[in-house]
Length: 488
Picture 1 (cartoon, rainbow, N blue to C red):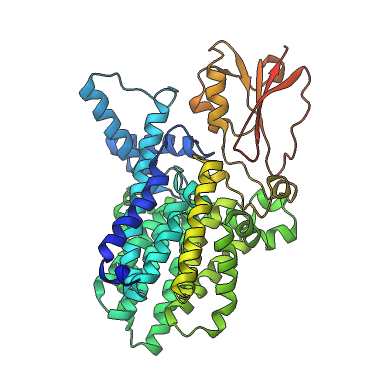
Picture 2 (picture 1 turned 45 degrees about the horizontal axis):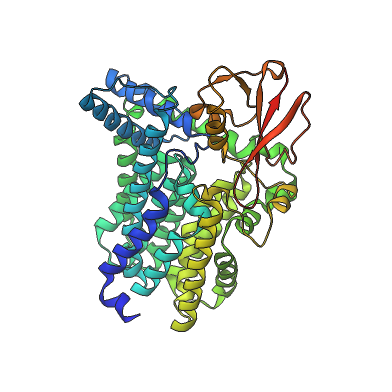
């Protein structure tokens, strides 16, 4: 590993390529995750509000998802400028030929933002630990299948995870060198995290506790906490125009919505008590690679022997995330992405202590595993399920969640049949609609076709009167979406 230490810039370049390649290919037609179309519409509304200077209307959703909307705005403006330069007529989200272009560009913007955070993380990890840990972290996070899949979405979860992790690493770096720019950058990135999703308040809580602890053990002064808070607040206000004109309304709306998500979400009524308590540990088992699963368990179990204070801080942060999201009523598998970077770094530190021969064997094995996952799931990595388990097992356990996977495939299949047909899509309509060129109907009796998917509350394909299954869509292991042809 001498090369890793002496040529770290080569490591960063190699890891950046490894990170980007599976995340940027075939982005537009792979999947429109269940919320993607809504975030495109919100981005369009956000842009309209900026153009008309009706800044209050930039508040579109309680999350608040501002970073996703800025990404959507940038993509929309760039695509519009391109269409103008080529003499093309500007299209809308309702055009099934235009949507994949805008969707692809929006997701590319998100991936590039993630990649920028990723590179910063590599340098910070080298500072906190050593180049070897940074290399292992970069490699593992680049080839973790489910993580790759969520990074390919136009959504909030990955940005939330990367902004939070970058903020925490800058905070830890500040405790090493006491450079104020690290503290300001920590506040800046946590501010971006809060602009993405309010659950980043968990990161804020950890950071405040860490700085308060520093008052007593590391000679950290109270003014540093104020500087961190000022950087976060300034970032939140500068990039969120709605706060410029009606802050009280925005904060009250976000508070009420966040309270409902914690105590009154619909998932809380569907899941049993045991499913609620163990939801995220179970999702970890189902959605991580075998290496991350077993190395993660081993790393967490041996933490009581660990003396490195930064690893102990990261384990504390990881446990705080688990506890707070377990208490919340809202349970969605993709929310587990918030834990992945922290767990992967803990695992990277543990593996860095192994003999080079063993480490090389594990990393080669992980490379082969990711190749298998690519052959099996590409480009819809978010459909990944740990091969230790089966799709049927996860489905019957009540933890399978279809977030739009393979609806684009069904739409492209239906487009070949012509525009005059009527299709019913009982679930995940917004993952199917932007790609479909035909007619949609809410009524079964009017439908020529039905597109149906399995989910945690739909564990088998039902018999539909006067309809038969014509085709299935999915990956090499399971097919969770079916197209029914109907005789109406």
